[in-house]
Image (cartoon, rainbow, N blue to C red; front, top):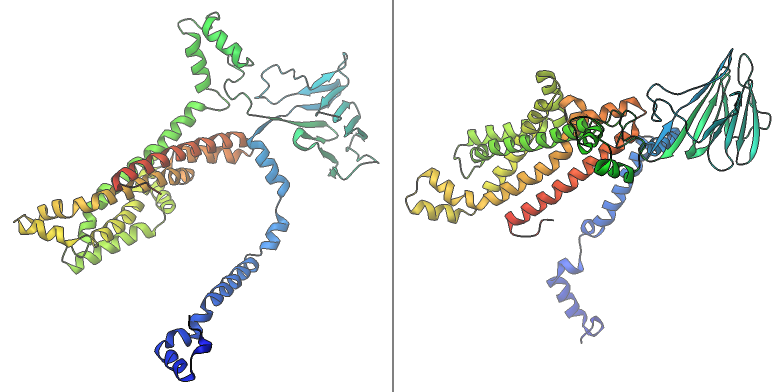
Length: 449
């Protein structure tokens, strides 16, 4: 094997002259990768300070974010203890998840009802009585004295306590928290799971476990005349006042229909318009230019903007959502279809044309068989993608589960309902993604990626 050390100076000069690109590499090309990396890092650093990321993170309310996430997988009971002239009174919200006559085992009282105990699990509990709330956290006792004007911070209070405007607050972590005022003690007691998910307190099945429900359905006494116990159970589940399953399922179906119908109409309209936009199909520069600018206009306006426009025009509902998807996807599919048509194999067209076929027949037998699988594959992808998009545009009034999701988020207290709907949306997207992938793989003859 010959090495460069064995070459004469004359031969080395010849090689350098013959392979100048190898021995004399352009400095710009040589340092281009490094320059790109440096430019990218500089850009990210500038964005970091331009958007004031450090300030955003320092001002973020991480504890509130944690509570929101906890609300997705848990529920709260909210009793309160009012200090009345006639004594201490325990109250529950009007629509308490504990039912009309709540008697939870984590609240107990003396026979006289002058002292109440609320357990938060472990060595965490409070004793509520006139003028005093005894707080025990992790085995340590703190006395919150209540005067006519305010609740006083305990002398041995830890950092866990917070005092503001005569109110003393304390968190027991995930188990809940309390707020002590001079007039009342508010309690938020948190539990894992979704309360009353299957049956609300008005149902005859409320409070039963799964085995008891099945026993009642199969062999229990008839609950309502003219109805089987199974139909009563299904009806009570669907029309659960707290979870509104029937309405959620209907809104989810609206979202699916919006995505399907909007994509279908867009694909049907974009198909013939793409033939006008394709330069090798329609030999008119004016028609090509006008149609492509029409596609640009439709797709340059975001689907959310179209949804706001049509909501104003048609009012809230799925029609506005269908129109928004139809307009946006007509522009996008039209552009994709026209580009696919401009790249077809002209040999098939010429072959069909040589047989004396009419212009329409040339497109039908010479072009459509080449592009139809690709067109269908792209339409299927957009149908699957629009299942997600329909949720977003629904939030601005276009109907569907997006509007239901926004309503639950606005209350600020129904985050478990938000979690429920998000899970349903994820399931639907997962199912339709797999259906779309399977159909596209069949159409293009290979496994869809």
